[in-house]
Amino acid sequence: MIGRRLAALALGLTGLAAPGGARTIPAEQAPADWLAYAHQATTTITGWINGQEGLDLRATIDTGAAGPADAQTTLIVMVWVDRHGALTRAEFANPASPPAMAAGLQKLLVGRQLTPPPRKMRLPMRLALGIAPKQTPAATI
Image (cartoon, rainbow, N blue to C red; front, side, top):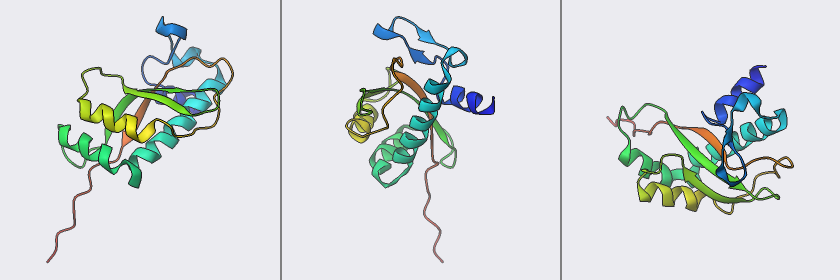
């Protein structure tokens, strides 16, 4: 049950989109293998964004972020993967996101490889990604 709740958080508020984007499936109604896959995808993508390869995207996010520099930021993104697990598209859930952030997200994620998704899994996945707080340089004496 706890794993299902964690995965539900990973799927964000609306869950998984139906084919054609007609409607979404709430996380609590999604099959367990879809939830497990979304949780795995969230962990992997969050690692990429918080890692060395995500520096440019994080710098763009930090530039537009409101609030304390030491606060974690949560980004809601939609990602599409093909049947082989290749990320083919990534967008911020908020269509008003700055173009530089959207471009940075695309540059970082599109073409990367996840494991193949479960058969018949509805896409896109809507994921809540925790972005590490901005690191401030240590004061020198």
